[in-house]
Image (cartoon, rainbow, N blue to C red):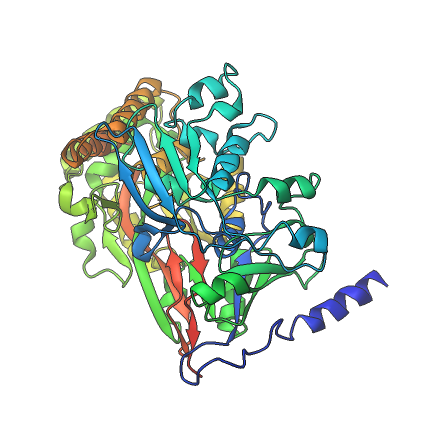
Length: 548
């Protein structure tokens, strides 16, 4: 019986929630029922607690923060109408729009009376109090330690109500910092800083963000259905327009269906089958053969890492690989790849300029095969080995063209006499094997969750394949550089600090940069104006149009 109900629900989902609006103008691209995909079920749709990419995508369509992430990860105003910063950089005064409305699709009159009202300053105050309340155990509060009293609250010395976020007036918010942080607007555009209406949260009685009946937002869309059975096939989230906000700022799609798949490869298959309109992917091979429009952003750096339990992880062996690697000898690279001589990819911005324009690339080790052989021989001697065992390089399918990787494997073989092969697997198998340590060498991707140099360095420090067992002091030094850059009072100082941080990563040799890689947005030929953030993995559909 349960299976029959699920099948009937799946059939119903094929019917657009709202239908095409009668007032949609012909040729405007509005009124289309869009279809997208999520690679996994959202862990929660509580903005202060959500972690995975699927949750972030849904939340950025359900909610709007003080700021939003625009084209190529740039920060733009959201609920914030305007803001000023004090001369010492410690106080942000933010004026709010009065036309960003809470909205939920519900027949419960008690809930409706709590909604369809404008977001106000107290909604953000309450969100930050929840973020820092130890009762909720938010994994994100460390990101916001720059806010006044955050450290004392985290250390249990102050109540969460003391956090330095204040409602000066109904639509005027003040945020006080413990130290200047030029990246605060980025932080305020992320899901943990999205508003929360206290009366609605309390009415949910502990279910907030966990089911379709316990979610209300102030974004372009409202939750209609959330069906998920880990053993079923018809898992889906379906959203309809937030009609109140549509009256103020047009929401072009009539509704949005997000199919929930259990793997990246399954999500990609939906797009190649023509079942969805839009797909975000890091698969360069899929992007190169895709029909329709393809956009790419260089937001990832791909590099070589060694299993810390493998002899390939010996510092002199890693150094020998670096001295052997000659990216200039690879010739023309496939579209979507650039040779990497640094850690920060070209489309990561600092002061609205590419980090690569501000920080000259300087690989710590230039190609020197003679020195590579000396280092390699010394490394073998210290390992008490005559040669290294044969090994495989683990890599998700489609990340780097096979021919390019085989050229690098030949370089390492010809100079160092090592025998390696390439093993391509699904992204799910790749992640599982990295976690288990089931690899010799691997191609790892560094990518921040925001267009921010610090985020990429944080990704380096937190990557499961990075081994810092013998480099605790190096880690502390890098963390110190990042903290200094965060509180720097000028872009020039930030540039110098990030330059030093990049040089240290290259010198440590745990990660050998090989390529800057793109993340892609694939759209059917009839689809236009889909907004996306390749860093955060978020696709926003409110401006999306269809011109069938």
